[in-house]
Image 1 (tube, one colour):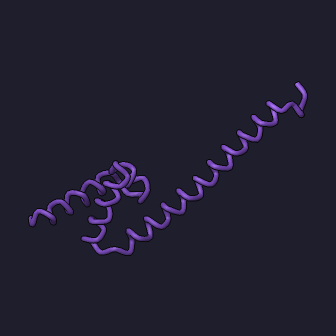
Image 2 (cartoon, rainbow, N blue to C red):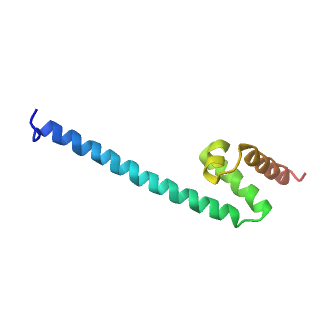
Image 3 (cartoon, helix red, strand yellow):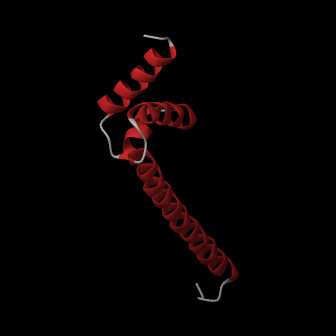
Length: 90
């Protein structure tokens, strides 16, 4: 096939577009991770548990929160439970 074939050119442009979008999403995700970790580190103990609980609700998974904040799943679970206990007056 010729290098100037319209279908080949369109396919190459589309693939390059997907690569550009993936690269941009990776940058955004990395920036969000840095900001989330900085926010977490700046909070008090009770603030951390509220923050982690809210993140888990927003992301839909404690595992995703653990990955984003570079914490263990056990620590995330502990923070979520402490927030539930605090909310229940225990």
